[in-house]
Amino acid sequence: MNDFDWIDTQRDFEMLVDELCETQAYALDTEFHRERTYLPVLAVIQVATPDRIALVDPLAVDVQPLRKALEADTVCVMHAASQDLEILELVCGVAPRRLFDTQIAALFCGYRTSSLGKLVEGFLGLELDKSAQLSDWTRRPLPAADLAYAASDVAHLLALRDTLSAALDARGRLGWAHEEIERLRSKDRSQSDPRTLWWKLRGKAKLGAKARGVAQELAAWREDEARRRNKPVRSVLSDMALLSLAQRPVRDAAQLRGIRNFDAQRFKHADALLAAIRRGVQLSPSDVRLPPKKPANAANVDGIVSLCLAWLAQRASEEDLDTTVLGTREDVTNLVLEQPSRLSDGWRQDLVGRELSSIIGGTAALCVKGAELELVDRPPS
Image 1 (cartoon, rainbow, N blue to C red):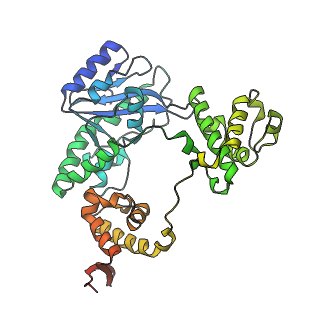
Image 2 (image 1 turned 45 degrees about the vertical axis):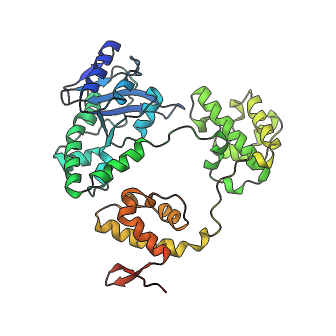
Image 3 (image 1 turned 30 degrees about the horizontal axis):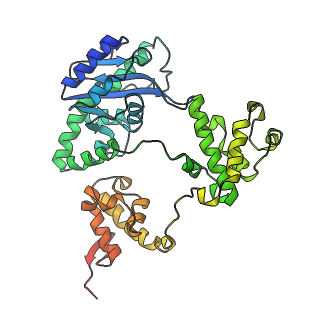
């Protein structure tokens, strides 16, 4: 993996973008860090065309022109693209217009691993060196071993895509993979409503009515403060301290010293924090955004859900799919409760969704036949 170009000038980068726009498909990956900042720090962009591999230095060039390639009518091939798509939308404002994710495609070939190395070994018979996974990608110059590792992440993606596509086509599942990849590509990655951020707190169920308002305002303030300072959210204020302040709202800086898991020394200027607490205390109940309630009949459907999950697991085994790929407990529960569910449309509906709906609706039943279940029609009563 030593045959690659290191691109750290704007002119060379824009020429590379033009090359990407002219190909039928190109591979793309990113290396980034997000441990010490609010926003992820993009450190390397790796791309491969049928003709060459290039490593781009985002610390030296403006990567915004990459948007031109992302919006072009060419396929961007990635592996486990979820976080990379988040980065691309952050730095370029868009996700690729056309995407192929080798991780998702492999799931429909019976693979149950997300490892690129395992897929390259299984489909192409090659072994990747993954020893540089924990490198500091922001240091310059990057060691030769790190550069080789970065290049290897895209070197085989185009060949892997071709092999996976042929395998999926032979199984009649290429459309399934494209549908699932498009679901990921078009996912809404916009910022959450700041008034709902407190829903993520473990222990929120123990908060009383007034405490919920304080938690809502503190979580929104914490997010805004983390964004302003470009620091991880929990380094601004820990979840434990936030919950403690919600349950025991303080009125002045002196009282902060008694809050559990709260470093008062770091809050020498606590005016904004105290103001958020006051807003929360004064918040009217109608202005507190509460998490969605479970449907009233949710507790009564456990048996039906378990029955449906048993059939779903058998169907997944028959189709050589990981059960969670076909559907989760949440998917099944939503279907039973007539809530939006992935099992209600597309390939999942065709494969198992309609069968589950017939079980739920009483027009079909499951019977035990040996070690397996059998779906049988129920005559009208």
